[in-house]
Length: 363
Image (cartoon, rainbow, N blue to C red; front, top):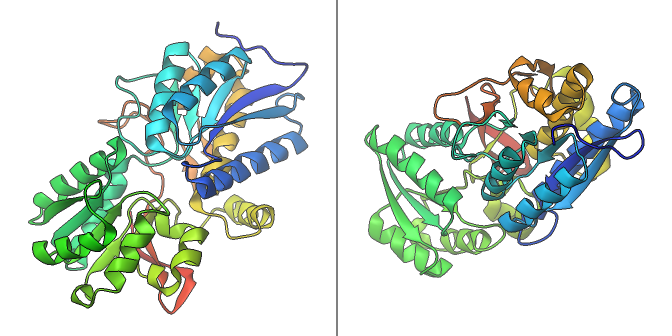
């Protein structure tokens, strides 16, 4: 069935969001805030041809099976499209199901390159692919003088993909990468491994808050590792929870975020509204949520709510978002419609002022 049902006059959009553990709930809260703010503004401006947008939210809790069930349910409820998701492995499962059902899915925040096994017309993505961001991160490490890198990694398709990207990119530029298997070691034992491998940087490819927070504490307290850089490309240090748990120990830990040097005028206005809604500074994930609805609203106004027409419209999207002009294209090696120029930064918390972020590299 290509044409969705709607209850009354509303246009339904499904939203996949991690709102409970073991999902990264802070990211989920920011993603949902962006989605909801944009929906409220769309409705204040008259909705979709006079029909209000209704956001139908489902909590994925970082569970791929739960996400698959949610996509099935949302399809049956007649949503025009599905949006959202933060966790890459969950988004991958949701994308596969949306593709199988012929349901448009605009992925807000998941970066795994192989979001679907085969090229699909049904899925588009706002966040940059993992390979682009993590290669920039590897270049940052090399530029800072780090050529012998260790990763403390937990078993995961996402962490394994990141490790592969880093290893290949570093090797092509004279660097090396060693893996420390967190399934077999305590955070304290990581310190001995770092000393043994003579690594000058340790990357946390592990969950937040644990074991990442415990690893940081162990390394910071080991005098042998005083000069070791701790990094977290997946973005854990942006979390307010990270700052609250680690204090000064959580500063100077570079991570990736997807913001430009300057927000667009729309982005500046949205930042103020998101800060009020969240009662804290919005993360890049909140902007991704807002931009997701901005794109879908534009598509639905222009092409109606027929699912096949929505999917066919991805290459014609041209929307001014909070972080730049959004267009989708086919990027080599990426199976979905991709915003190719999504901004990427390497940033950290300033040791002198941990609530302030320093931009270390952009790309």
